[in-house]
Image (cartoon, rainbow, N blue to C red; front, side):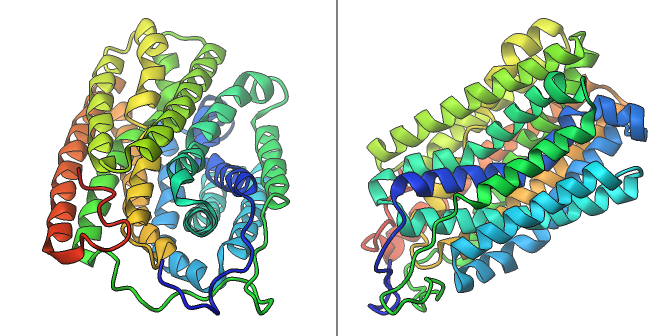
Length: 411
């Protein structure tokens, strides 16, 4: 990473604390939409939330995140990761307490989710920047895997919240518990300083080693399609499982089991990425293709398919984000937060469109048709990532192969 001596931090946070912080804050800030999906049955009884309404609620969260992601990525480059992470967690906690206390109509629910989505858009590039600056290169594959495990951790906690909280004391208390988690995550955030005592917040001026915008847009398109297919899992798995014949509590537990397997898969993929050194986009494409196959199994809408294939969906079609972000950071060494802010825009856009369309199709046609649509989208995402990989390789071969990290994503 190109940086002047004055901008070079004198002290870095310890790697263990970096990993704890990125996992804790990222998880706390991404929980709200998955908690909405997991408690959708209770919300339907209390607020009249339909499958389309669930998709809209999840979509609003990620729409706000999509609009805010690029500018907040640049803001994080200016002010540094630590204050950005603290602010994101604090805003998330306030939003979830607002949902618990005040959400008695759809507009209020959507308003709080929109603010929460913006907080998540601040947390994600801030966590990426902290990993890129303070974690050794040879550990960054595992680091991004742990950070991106925040999503299956969020769905795991959401799934467990159904039998443990939502079915006992009510869905509102699940959001209170989640707000407590967000507040607790603030205490994990480290502070690093430059030699002159100021906080590390000044972005480097040299962007010559970063990917050109057309390649970034292609990557954002591929990841938008991937997110559109994968985002339906956390939002609709419980509702679709109940429709397929599972008991409500059982569907929540299967969701938690799938999330656990997804966490393990992401961590294993991160360890392998550190050993492999490159080829990350190729693995991303393979995972998306595997997810498409599993979504076809879920389209049978049978209880056994959800119990057997459900966890596999989290281990294939939703295990790729850590590898993708690692690839983007490696080829954008001068401004990783701004770069991932751009690609996160694609992620969030897909996370908006996917649940909204899935919910509409489920309401007006069937869950079977909705899962088949998710399979088709995942297949298209895999093909788009393959095309993006070719463009990255062409960019490397045009004269950038000598730049640090430029070879990390090609083969």
